[in-house]
Length: 321
Image (cartoon, rainbow, N blue to C red):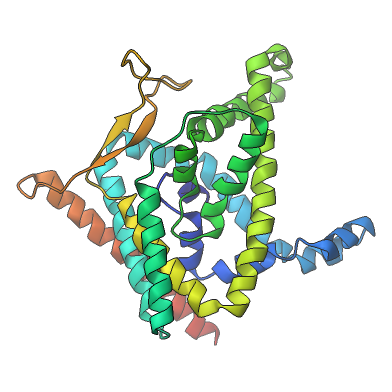
């Protein structure tokens, strides 16, 4: 989930959905409520651990943090050097996910088909929105945290892609994270010179605000989704299936990045010297090219990987039963 949440177009919530722990994830987050606050005030931390499903959430968060700083670095490299094949793999994974999720969904009535179509329309519409300009106002950054974390709770909705549309992907997931990494590295060697660097302090303040917004978004969205899953489960699943289907447009492999430019037409660069992506120009594949067929093989491999994981999970459930 950590790696998926960082890649624009890929939803961490979809990973949870396909892996079979989405509902447990949502209902565990719902336990952060007034009852958990009372347990903290009363010092009943052991009860809090069991009440909030602490073992599950701590393992999940640990895996996300590790993957964010390790697997996601590998993904960044692969996207830079093998972009077509990476997007093809993601496209295949989503295709496999759609098949896996929908094959056991038996409540295909007129109402749920309508909800699925609304999900598809919403997913496709988001993929064609134009990105905004970067904004480091702390209230807006807090709002970005609430919206950006949606990729963890809403399968098919990429939080990273939403941050691109809001104009703050580079600020929040590149510059601020790099600032935190450099700061922690300096603290480990007892170097506190960053306290005199106003730009570093600004980025750390931005990251802290974004984190607070993300936590607020996780808790609030989980309560909303938990209610919907409890009272309108089939309709919610239909919307999720539609949303995941609509998100295929975001990860369409055959596309060219459109980079942001200033008024004179020069490319805008982030702090690392990389061009800032504005959006993508999508096109149909050229079947006469060899790399097109390699990409198609990656699509098949991506779908096969998801279905294999689902098959292994099913066999493990049968063994446990």
